[in-house]
Length: 198
Image (cartoon, rainbow, N blue to C red):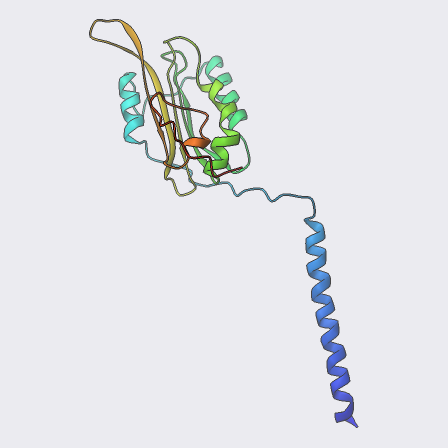
């Protein structure tokens, strides 16, 4: 008698377990319905200055230990940059505003989605770093979540041997991502592949 009741009981128990699992999965899907998952923010915390950054600082008579400016104007500029760079999937690794020349700014960012960041999130940050005229200097470095270079861009006033003022700049974009960058250097190939991000 007991043996004859065992199979139906076992099947019923199995159905309950399966239905419970389906209910849990459905509940999980419904709770996420319409909500897009946010990209994970990198957590590099610190990154050693690159050779380009050191050369840029040297060209401005600064170094990695030069103090940041403590004026209200410098604080305002830093706040504006932080506001424009505070986007999903991006970490501000280092931000420094120097007093001279003209609130020179050094900014290092880590992006969990490098192509997407260059294509959609970098452009609003650029005006916060740059200004018209030769009396401004800026440095921007973007790395991925592992600290590998994605973009490195610098500019500073310089002087030629004839003492005529001119501007000195550098730009590196990771191969394959040139089509994502809103910053383009003179001499870039005209056959740049399209950005892999949408």
